[in-house]
Structures are given as C-alpha cells and as structure tokens.
Image (cartoon, rainbow, N blue to C red; front, side, top):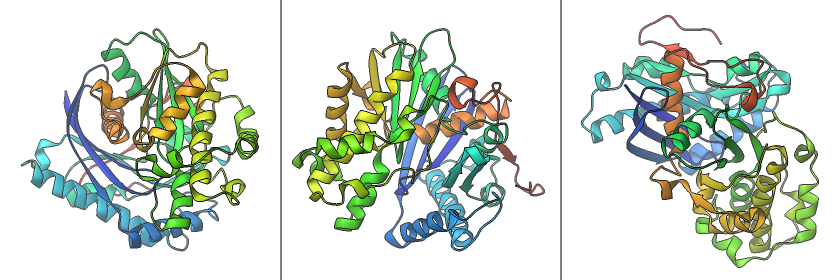
Length: 372
C-alpha cells in the first residue's frame, strides 16, 4: 500500500482539489482527507486568458501569451495547497509516497496528437520534497489515443470493490462530461459524452458575474427550449463512434443567446443530460445504474433531467460513500501509484490507444529536469 496525494484543477477552472488515499493501485482504495481551494477572480481571469492564448499552440512545449504566467500560478497554487494540507493534518513530506499532479488543461486536440496541461511537475516536486507523477495524458496521445478519459480505471476499482451488479455507468460531470461503462470481465469503456458545467458556468459568468448555477437554481426556475435543445444535439460529435474526447470549448452557447437566463441554463442543463444519455448507443448494454460525480452531481436539475432521459436509477457518488466532488483528485492519486508500478492507465476501450498503456512523468526532488 502507498500513500498518495492527488491534485486536480478541472476544466471548469473553479479551483484545486486535493485528496489523500491509501492504495495498492489495483483493487484496494482507502479514502483519506480532502481539501479544496477556490481560485479568486483575478486568477480565473488569467486562466481564461491562457485558455484563449492556447488556441494558437502548435507544439505542446510552447507557452504563448498568458501561458507562462498561468503555469507559474498553477504550480505555485498547487504547492500552497499541498503545504497547507500537510500542516492541517499534521503530516510531513515523508508521509506522502507520491503526488499525482494533473495540472490545468488548456488545449486538447488528440487528432493532432496535442494535449497541454499547465503545471511544472519538477518545480512542484522540488518545492515540496515529494516525488511527483505528472503529464499523465501525453503518452496516450503520442501513441494515437485520445488521452481522455483517464479516470475509468479508478471508477472500475470503486465499482468492483462495492460489488455493484452491472453494468454500471459512472458519469463524471466536470467542465466536460465523460462516462465509464463498468461491466464484469472487461476493461472499462469510456469516452467524453458532451458538455457538462463549462457551458453553464461561462453563461452564468457572462450574465451574472458568478461562474456557476448554485444548486441548479436557475435551471430549476427555467423551461427547456426543445427547439434549441434539438439544435444543440445536432452537433456532429454525437454521431461519432468512440473512442472520442472533447476540448472544453468544443460547444458554443450561442444557440441559447436569445433565451432568458433561467431558460438558457435549463436548456444547457438538459443538453448535458441528453448528451450523456445519448452515449448509451455506443455501449454494449443498457446500464442498470448511473452514478454521477463531479460538480454536476450537485446540480439537481441535471440529475432530474438524466433520470428522465435514462429511465433507470441515477445516484450520486456520495450516496455510495465515495466523493462526488473529489473523485478526480482521488483518481490522480490512484493513477500516480499505477504509474510508479508501470500498470496501465489507459486502454483501447477507453482512449482508443493501440494497447493498454501506462503513462506519466516521474519528477524526483532535485533531479535533472525532463524535457517536454
């Protein structure tokens, strides 16, 4: 068993999640304490500018425009989170075997074999004195995989440990939605389903100055425009067979521009649910249960829409004693241990990579820097 601390800054760009687990990187996971740190508006503004500047990137080691400053911010904030976490729980760096550091995705174009997660893993390891596994998507993309989703092997460990009768769909609703199909005797099937919180967050920021629909209040107060929803569902992505993955900005909220804020948010929430339910066409069998994690698990409007679309039980990860909000941070701790053990992080059925593949770069404190 190893003690691993996972760090996640998601595509919703709301803050950093940190989660401690004890795991063997296979079937045993014991969950420990967690913490989250929200970015302030100035920091979010810098990250949004980095996201815009990243569009021009052609090589993954480029850092045009705001990306240099954003990478420094990401690395410093993650170091601060870990330092504060250790103090809060009376831990020393020697108590942590490995950090799993996802970084901040600013560009994801697997068709161009290009994925970029900001964050200096070597600088983080040096500042904390803890070995760190980072850049976990790159190896998969370099071998022709989608580089996403990475979390399914962790979903599989949780579902199997809970002895749930399958098949089970674990739906992560962060900035983008992704599903893991878990069935006995096979590797997880996984792919991005469509938008999740990113469109809603961006619309809320634009119209209200607050980058989320707290507790789904706007969506619950609004009415779904079925005509607009049909236009959104006509996107070519939904007709593509997996493996497939999405950039955060793959979808536009332009279609809801003429709607009131409650109706626009309700329609985007329904879009998240309907696109997730539409993923069933690519699965071997209908899931008997949907388990929702990520920020979308706190949005009752999305959950209600998903229940209506699937017609089967929809529950949150918290109901199983997991963590809906910290699932990805825990997963990157788990993946870091798998990386150290040279175990697969991705599979042909999850990313389309040609064979099961490990990944990640190991940064040891004080070692010579690894070139990207």
